[in-house]
Image (cartoon, rainbow, N blue to C red):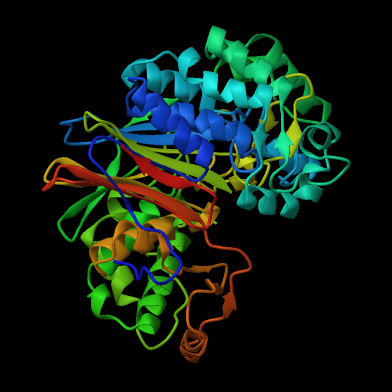
Length: 526
C-alpha cells in the first residue's frame, strides 16, 4: 500500500467492471459503453477509436492492432493479429537495385493499415454492438472537438518537426506551424467524415472506395508501391497464443510477428532467480542481461511466421532457458550470444477492460513512432503508420521485406491466467521497451508483492542498443553499481513506456485496476 502522505495514485477497486487506458476520454468512453450494455470488446474498440482521435501521436485508424480476449469461462485467450502487410510489389530486390532504405517518414515504411479490419472482425465475432455504434463517440470528438491533455501536448511538441514535414499533416495537426498546447481544443472534420463512412460501411468504407483511393494516391505520389488491390485484400488473423508458466501463473502473448515471445523468454530465464530478494543493483543487472539475450534473438529471428520460420518451440524450450541462464554472470555484463542450435540470420496506446460478465480483453493499437510516418492522406484525414520501418532490406534475413509480408512488431498485449481462469489483462507501451515492460510489471506484481498501481509506478530500466537506460526514479548509486559491472548507463530522457492492468481478484470477486502516471490516463470501475 502506498504512503498516503506522498503524491501518488491508489489502485481502483470495483465490483462489476473496470477499465484502464492512457487517456481520460478513452477511459470514460469505455465505462459509458459498458454502462450502456456493451461488453469488454465493445468498450475496448470504442475507447481505442476515441484515442485514435484525441491522441493522434500514439495511435490512429491508419495503424495496426493486436488483441488477447478471454471470454468468461475460457481456459485459453483468443488472439487476434491485426497487423498490416507490405504491398504486393515490395520485393527486396526492388529496393536494393535502387539503393532505397526504409526511412521513418518514407512511404516505404507504410504497410497496409490493419486496425479497421481487425476491429470489424473482433466485434463481429465477440462483440454485442455494431461497429457503427461503438464509433459514435470518436466521431463526436472529431467533429465537435476535444481538449489536448498534458502528456499528449508534451509529445506533440517533441514531434512538431516530424509532423510538419508533410504539408497535409501540418495543416491537420499544427496551429500556425506550432504544436497545440495543453488545454487547446482540436477538431478533425475530415477524420470525422472517414469514421462516419466506416460506421456506415464497415471495413469497405476504409479499404475500398474514396478513402482507399485517397491513401493510395498520397502514398504513390511520394513513390510508394501501394495499390488499391493491396488495401482491398487487408485481413486480420485469429491465431494461437503462445505461453509460458511463471511462478504458477500462465502468461499468454500473441505469437510472432509480435515480440511477445521475447517477454516469455526473459521470464523463463528469470524463473531461476529469487527476484524479490535481490538488491536493486542485482535486479536491474539481471534484467539487463536477460533482456540482451532475448532481444538479440528477437532481432535475428522474429518475423512473419507465414513467410519465415520462427523457432518458437526452441526459444521457449528448457534447453534455451538453460543456455541463456548460463550466459549470465551476476558480477559482470556480458555480450549476448545467439544460441548455436538456432540457425542464424544476418509510441502506441494500450488499454484493458473486464466487464460485468467477467470477459477480459487486452488491446493495443499503434502508429509505431510519434505520428507514425507523418504522412496524412489529404481528403480522408487518415494519418498513416510507419510499421514497415521494422523490415530489413537484407536477403535471407527472416524479417526482410517481401510482398504481402508483415514486419516484426513491437506492440504486444498480455494476458495472465491461473488454473484456467483469467487473472489480468495487462500491457505496457513504449516501442521496443514493451517486452521488457511486461517483465518488469509482472515481476513487480508476482515477485516483489507490489499492488497493480505500485507495479506500474515503479522506476524502469531497459538494456537496448548497448546502453542501459534508467528512469529518474532510481537512486543515484545504481548508476555506479551498474558501471562497475561493465554496463554503459544513461538516464532516460523521457519515461520508459506506460502501462495498464486490471486484476481479477477471484477470492473476493472484485476487480483492481491501475493506470500508469507517465500518461494522462486513468483507471475507472463501477
